[in-house]
Amino acid sequence: MAFGLYNNPNRYSSYVNFSAASPNAPEVIAKPIEKVENVITNTVDSFVKEPQDEEKKKSHKTAIAAGSTVLVLSTLVALLNPRFSGKFLGKLQNLSHKAAVNVQKNKDDIIKSKFYKTSEKVLKKVFDIFQFTNSANASKDLGFKWLCTAEKFNGVKNDSARKVLKTCDAGFRKLMTPLHEGITKWFDGISKSTVYHKYNSAGKKLDYLDDLIKNYKNKLTPSEQKQLEAKLSEIKNAQKYFSQERTAERLAMQEKSMSHLEKDFKDKLFNGYLKQFKGPRSEGTFKQKMEHNKKIVQDNMSFWAEDMLMPSRNTFEQEGKKAVEELMGDGKNIRGKYNEVIDMLSPHITKEEKGLLDDSLRVAKKKLGKANHSECVEYFDKKRDLMLGGAPSDIISGIGMIGLSGIAVGTADTKEDRVSRALTLGFPAVAGIGASMALTAMLFSGVQSIIYGSIASAGLSQLGSIADRTLNPKKTVENLAQSTSPPKQPPVQTV
Image (cartoon, rainbow, N blue to C red):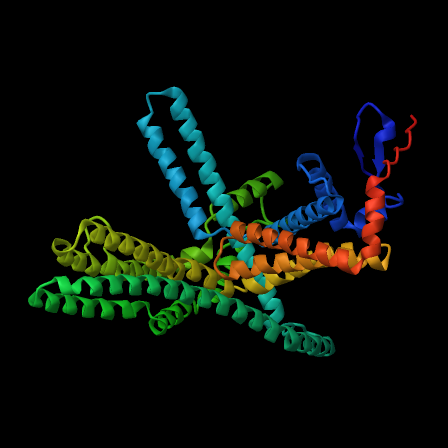
């Protein structure tokens, strides 16, 4: 079996045969990352204005190509492990709702009404597909977790076969269970540290605000100073809610709320979902069975794990929001303790001093709100994925992509080329993908982690190019000679 690409549909000579017997096949199969790098490098040649210095030109091209290669590899990891955050899905849902509202507002305008109605339908469909993707991905993660940690083959009837299979399974689990649990614990530790770090950052802004307030305290009367001290004491007590000890307690409560998640998810998957499908031996025509199965999929688009835990997440989120508003207010109707303190100081301080207090309060409120959102929503969602076995499957996919970059390094023709590729592509690719995965554990969104990982890879590739020129000075001279020599003319193709 063969397939081909036509660069010019009017000329048969442009047909490239990629059959198994073709001499092109080993190159395509054995060097996938090299192909990606070549395409990216050629694109860079076409669109990027390069410096005149040949070595700088080569270095810039290599850095961009390496960063772009990691972008491709990281995107492949994301495609193999698609997870769409609740924040992203919430935005999609809000856009769908707004479109529905605009349908009613513009019902007399045929064009606008039709546009908003189509937008609502498309957004809802995309939202449903992403939700279903989350469920499918969670099922895959749970399957891998079962493979690594669960005891198997108890149902094998043959005693000898069962004994052999269980012995092999015990050895496999002895290796994989600690590894699976260790990776999960490592990711969880990074995520928790991220939450603590954000609260520490918010705490510094609160300390600065407290110092400002104390600086202005002497402008009050003695009785007002006592009132201020009492209010500051209330603030200190309220701030304890965000201490690391209290935060650790709440994170433990989050984990406790998920204690039955794996069991409930399996029950939903095997007893509430898969059993509804009609197989080849069930009653009805093929078309009827396909329509029935299609309806089952359409009726179960929601992310089951999220649905099961949404009441708990809402409770944590509401409690956290209430704690923030107790200190900072909500900017509308609720007045926080800091607002009350600033109100006490306002008659006694200048307009500039009042503005400084307001700005400090605004910055501290924003920091504290983000830290609390990270705890109650971002960490909660990450912990849910970890409970279902998400981190180890991410690692496996990342290792696969790193392996592809290793192929590109290993297939170089000479030792010098292998060293050069390792410095400018291999190491930056490994570091870039690793950075992307670490950023995901640090509660960054998938898109942010991919972009930042690619930037890090491009920077490391620049350092690799410098090291390459140092370690392979002879190769550098050869490259310069090749770059100044006239280009080879392509062979003439005959029909």
